[in-house]
Image: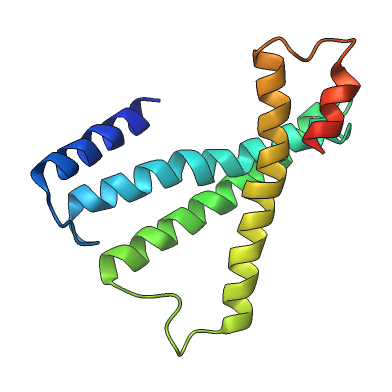
Length: 147
């Protein structure tokens, strides 16, 4: 929450100042990559963790295995995040003409699968529990929404 609040304040300041902020500079790097850290790195591990429960793959007998799998995905997304920062700092465009389109396609859509599909299911599952909507009587109902 704190990272997003700082990013929010920086965006308000930009709006008030009518600044035309370029995609360069430390301030812009923090704005972009603080959000990516939470949403993509932590979100990648959290998506695997939450969705494994939605699919009933994670239970008391398999929890430690899924903890390792989720941590592995989090580590992969952390490395991806570091490479994105390096591209930002050096000005490299991963979409330029000389890039390998097949590799780029895999990078984009594997991240989308984990973050948007699995993450969406995990978010519905977690939110329904946090809001006390998912109780033993409604668990399978919310499992359907999360899948």
